Length: 239
Picture 1 (cartoon, rainbow, N blue to C red):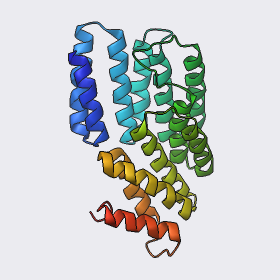
Picture 2: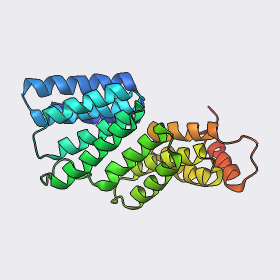
Picture 3: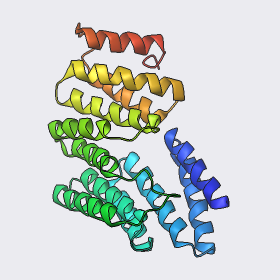
């Protein structure tokens, strides 16, 4: 029970981008997992730590933690596949395109072969893997590829993950802006902003601020103007 509490606390602090607190709770969870010699919890906690490192942009730390999670995870479980996906994202952040693609291909194969587990990893499917690869493509500068992959993956996501979906939509918006597609970027950004405001998720709002910085402040394009108006109305872009 303590491990589950620590894992949830870490996720909440991760969503708030409160990195020190997130790391504190993952460290507690990892210690308690080792004390119980619980490989499932060890793998899950290392996966969380890898995801946090990815969110902080530390690719090398992320893929090393994800590889450790893959070694710790019981064979044939979904933990192994999720770890491989975060290995791929970490490699992308580190600029290692070929290694990233191999890791994501391995994640898909492992996900297809994994045992069904109703208590953990039910979210793991190809769209989940694809949105993380798309995020990695942004880091690699493949904005067009990222936009297309984000779109297909978000369309294929199962229902019930509103906050996570908005994170991915916001990241797709950033990819659009970096590709020079200002109006679709602003339209996607406004949709994600609504969820970010209602949930207070800094994972979403951080991308909204990045998008705002990427868009031309003097643009008269209708969607860009609407995005800025919404941001001012909800006091998102005034800080």
